[in-house]
Image (cartoon, rainbow, N blue to C red):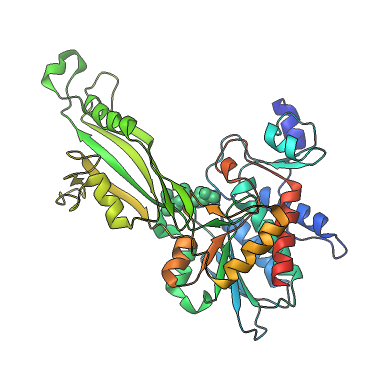
Length: 409
Ligand SMILES: N[C@@H](CCC[C@H](NC(=O)CCC(=O)O)C(=O)O)C(=O)O
């Protein structure tokens, strides 16, 4: 599609979000999806979308709405015996030529082959956040407006900063500032799962592997030490690493160790005195953070240097400087909880899907730490999360909203 055509088909930013009172579920979901997709909400820029979602939630008389920063917590207070928490993050990863969004009509070549094959004659929403996770957000907003008499009390959480460093996570901040807002018997995180159940999650940690050198003129390289060349050894160790698949409580978690960023050098004719490889380690729930760190940088993680850098005393990066950037724990599947079991049963009936492991990191780990059983269940294909051509068929929204409406209603 040419830039001009893309421009013509792009969805414009709405003034408000909402749907007509006589809209069918399909129409309401399509309207909500289109509206929230059209509001740019890359992490750090969630404010305008949060404001719109807040106004939408405050128009629902059966909900009590609270806000902390850019996180919204809306709850029913019907005095039911149990409470279920439904969570969706409003932020997306950075845009790569995939904003503003557009509907792809059936037959559009931008529809991925597997989606076209499984959903012929169907519209597909394309653009940043389509699968991670605005399709689920749309479904949750629809439920928030229409489930006025659920059989359990409900708490909806729409939060900011899920895709970035853990200390910014909006759910983390609300749990810390207002723990009484986030209480319940079970939680569902709407991360993409193709409307199946994905149990637990891999843990994730990110750190810089730092090599040092000595700057000099590149015409007199013997006067210096090349930090980028030294980093070659760290890249070789990454290449040699063989990721494992580890089964925990019946679900298989694939681990991963990857460089995701690299930087170094400060002049085209200067021998670089520092090189940084940003590494992301995904570890299965058979390990806690301490064990995962030991595998990367040794049991004592080195002695702290003045600049916050540690020298790895063992593990994959033994001998290199390590600067920790972020760490988030893994979570076991926890599917033995009776509420999880009943949801697994309904999902199996509607989709034919058996539970699988969640390979990304999600806030089920936060709920696990709070002692609240939680699962991932959301619209969209997790394999398309963060991809340039993120997209979701329209019927995924109806499937997710329908399952949850029938389970909760
Ligand atoms: N603090 C972490 C946050 C990373 C969160 C992100 N989660 C997802 O993409 C879930 C999507 C899915 O797998 O369904 C992630 O795993 O990268 C950090 O900054 O790394």
